[in-house]
Amino acid sequence: MKGLKTFQRGGIHPKGRKELTNTKKIVKADIPETLIVPFSQHLGAPAEVAVAAGDEVKEGMVIGKPSGFISAAIHSPVDGKIKEIKDIFLANGMKSKAAVIEKSEGFVPVEKKTQDWNNKTPEELTGIIKDSGIVGMGGATFPVNVKVSIPKGEKAEYLIVNGVECEPYLSADHRLMLERTSEIIEGLRILKKIVNPEKVAIGIEINKPDAIEAIRKKAAEEGFELDVIPLKLKYPQGDEKQLIKAVSGREVPSGGLPIAVGCVVINAGTVNAIYEAVVLEKPLYERVVSVSGNGIKNPGNYLTRVGTPVSALIEACGGTNGTPAKIVVGGPMMGFTIYDTETPVAKGTSGILVLTEKEVNAEKRTSCLSCGKCIGVCPMGLNPTKMFKFIDHSDYSGAMDIGLMDCKECGCCAYTCPAHIPLVQGMRLGKKMARKKVS
Ligand code: SF4
Ligand code: SF4
Image 1 (cartoon, rainbow, N blue to C red):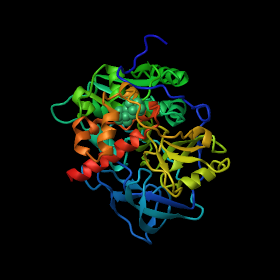
Image 2 (image 1 turned 90 degrees about the horizontal axis):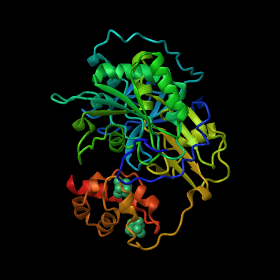
Image 3 (image 1 turned 90 degrees about the vertical axis):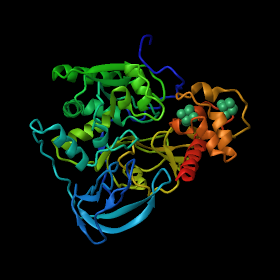
Image 4 (image 1 turned 45 degrees about the vertical axis):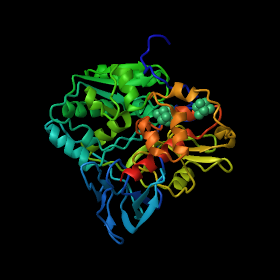
């Protein structure tokens, strides 16, 4: 479709593969008997462990306190007892302390009542968001109370809602926009009061016409001024920087934050979580997860308690069709392959993909063909092949000099590479090693 907004530099058009889940209504996943709740589910410092083995906990109780400016609180997803505090590996390979919670027998989640928030000040609302442990749920997991606290001297002209969900297979935000439309508009009213922007806009890719229509209609019905912007299909439009470019035409400088160009970006699922925190007084201990791929018996969008092991969620979805070739936490482009299905669902887990051999389509790696395709698709204007060569020779400074830290790990380069070189894994390793050298 001509005339639709998008970002200009780079990008790819992977197959959407959303049909397995995008027409399925959100359903509650069974809550397992044992949950594993990590204390590091966000960008920044891990939460300080506030419970010990043997402690009784209640649904929504704080079990981890923020331990720095950029940190987030962690809450118990159930009534139960702390069995142990142990070290686990998260989906991204990082180590974290986690509380193993045995759910109480006969646990029934508390029904939440709505609260009037209109008399609360922006500071009080930001405090609720902080106390509720709200982080960016699109995958970035940046603490939202920090994001909405506009530094002195800066002004948020645009509050932009990210309704793009451009990763293949995932449709959790799509379903939320359809099924929790009022809640998202109410969440936006809350955010508007905090951020005080000149404009509020939502960017939604054109493959979700029903969500575009639903949000537009509800905003009009409720008299909420919202610019609903249909976007051309292009990956990685859900990345904050690309979305800002597509919606406002502004370019966030290298190493800069969106507020540097007057923007605050919040993902649609996160707006719903803000509604739940403020209106229902419900901290973030539950989220919608797209469970998809041809390897899962009943793909769909499942309302899942944080701390649910991937194995239990797969079980709740009817199990697998044979032995999966790969299980991915997140989307296929930016997600992480896991080998231990006890890995728990966390606040930033947007999807669990159970993929078959056919879907994985692992082809053999060959030598670089110097075709330059990876350079053409990089939305950050980087030279992935050159950076990879530096990293391959352990020259991390060389890779950093040509922009390694600006790499978003979007996977466009690897997707397009005819030689099947694992470029993203290379970038991830390079960044990890470069950080180690600096610290
Ligand atoms: S993964 Fe990094 S280098 Fe590759 S295309 Fe994305 S931003 Fe560019
Ligand atoms: S796309 Fe692959 S083969 Fe082509 S230049 Fe980049 S790394 Fe080399």
